[in-house]
Every structure is written in C-alpha cells, then in structure tokens.
Length: 442
Image 1: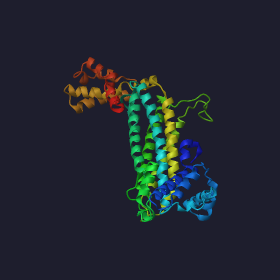
Image 2 (image 1 turned 90 degrees about the vertical axis):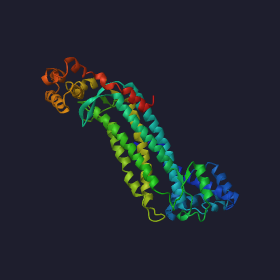
Image 3 (image 1 turned 60 degrees about the vertical axis):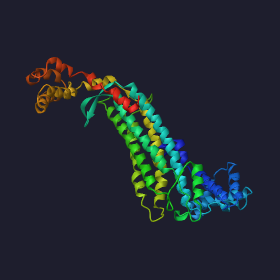
Image 4 (image 1 turned 180 degrees about the vertical axis):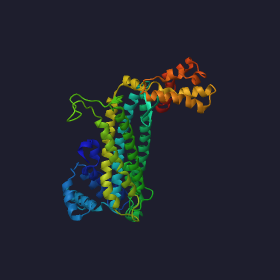
C-alpha cells in the first residue's frame, strides 16, 4: 500500500509479523485440540506454547530465506518454527504441528482473522464519522439552503437535512459492514479437500472458538469465496457513499456556489501558480480513493469461481486487495471525518443563493394553490411557468411573486395575500423534526 494513504493501526494488521503470529496461534490451538483428543502428545502442545511464551521475535527474513528454497510459504513457516522449538530445548516436539491439516486451513483462517480485525477498525471509523455528521446536522438543522435537482435550483431544504441524509446512509453502511464481518469471520480446519479425513471436526471448533470465529459449514479445501466477494462489495459500497458526500462538498465549494468549503489551515497553499486558490483537495482525494477501493470488488467477485475443491488463482488477488482495500478505506473514512468535523459552512451565502432566482423555488406551492382554487392542473402549470420563464430569463432580476400578482389568470383565482403566503420559506421546514426523528431516533 502507498504509505501516503495508510494509517499505522490498519497497516499493522497486514504486516508479515502479524500474519505469522496468527498462523502460529492457529497451529498451536489445533495442536492443543489434537492433544486433548489423544492424536498427538500433550508435550507437543505444551512445548509450542512454552516457546511462544518467551515472546519470540518473528524473524521474517529468516522465513523468507527458507521460502526461497521451499517455494511454499506455510512449509517455510513451519520449518522455521520447528527450528526455534528445537533450539529452545523441545527437540522433536514441533513435528506434531499441522497434523491432518492443509495449507488453506492456515491461510484462509488467518485471512478471516485479519479481515475481522480490519472490520473492527472500519466500524470504529464509521462510528467517528457518524458522530461528526450528527453534530453538524443538529448544528444546521434549520439552516436554509437550496435543494438542487440536475444541478438546478429546485426547492428549499436545510443544510441539516443534507447531513441527516449522509448520517442515514452511513448508518446503513455500518449495518452492512457488521453483517459482512459476521459472514467473513469463519474458520476452516478441515484438511485436504475439506473432508476431515485426517483431522477431527472438533479441532476446527476449538480453533474457531479460540480465534473468535464461527466454523465454516462446508469448505472444500478453501473457505468459499462468495463470503469474500460480499465483504469487498460492502467495502465498495462504503467507498461510494464516501464519494457521494465528498462530491457534495466539492460542488458546494465551487466559487459561484461557495456555501461550504474544506477547512483551509494557516500556511496552506492552494496552487503553485495562483496564490488566491483554496481548492477542495481533500474531497477530490476521497473521490480518487473511493475508485481504488471499488477496484477490488470485481476481482473479489471473480475469485468466487475456483477449480473443483481448490486452486490458487484467488491467492495473488487477495494479497493485493485485502491490504489495499481495507487500508485505503480506513484512511478515507478518517479523512472524511476530518473534513466534516472542520467543514466551513456559510449560511449567509446559502440564503443569498436561495434568493438568487427571484422566488422561483416557490413555484410548486403556487401551482398547487391554483389547482385547489379550481383551476385545472394543465392551466395552473401554464400560468406559473410562463411567469417563471420571465424570471429565469431575467437571471432572477424579476420577481415571480410580483409577476404572479400582476397575472390576470392567477389573480382571478388567488388573492394577493394568498400569493404572498405561498412564498413563506418556513413552510418547507415544517417536517424537519419528523425527518430528524426518523434518522436519529430522537
């Protein structure tokens, strides 16, 4: 992973040392269970933990050197452990490791642990983001701003509602990730082609319990990759939600809009050529990072179809997408939390933009009032639209309200006071409390 977009805690999950520590725990817990079943000597299990209790440093280069000869990572690791156990005085005891197991038992179960660990960090990231969004939502619950459809002024909303919408979306993201974590956190210690021919299923249950995993009901020689596909698809959806909120900030920061902008710190520079620039670089970066997370989804889907009981076409893919997708998403969630937490919001500019088009944003209320006054919908639409187009073409210099008052067809159905009432901004915010109660449950 690119260090620029990596945070230490998530990166550590994918370091070789963590991977090898998980491998050892899988092997040692399995040996414990085998010893309890009388398959291997109790002394073998005790020897492994006795050596491990000295907190040995995992010698990654030494393991790599063995793998350069064996061309097999699990065998290289087992060889290195056996050497260390022998050197610690427990000669010959390590030969009982890996009894009845196959490499995928170690690799797949380890990946499950790593993805579960990564999920826990991502869930904490989502909690922090949700907290920041909620705070800003309540802060601007009734801050008027214009809603846009197709990028064009539509009807009034509040900035708090924009934040509430994001809160609801990331709440769904959290629920999906919780489910994906459950789905991915499975253990397979079932031996070659998954038949348990050479290892008792009770070993799998013991290892699963020790590692906080569930057992894989049926695992050929690998854990089925539909689980992984769903996990990475979930990460892709979260990335898309990050991008959606990032794009909203980017649009709001455009010079001709400028209703909100990223915090610009003292000494920060926006351009090497133009000293006046304050660019939305963080949210632009988030758009790019989201693309990278989503790029893991299709390979994960393609990993589902393996040959018969096992092949390794998925392995090289997962060595990329496991670290890259989780590390990138962790960074992106942290960055978005910082953007929302420090987002500069300009209510006066929001109101200025809302008023920019001469009251056009209230056109639907007049349309509905005319229909309720007995005018056909077709005529009502025509009366309002012909006046709205005059305002549009004047770039908001004309007033829709005054044009409607002067329109004989409109004034024949609505009094001046009734027309005036349809331009009351507060009308649009009557249900904000209802929406907030739905979103925040308060």
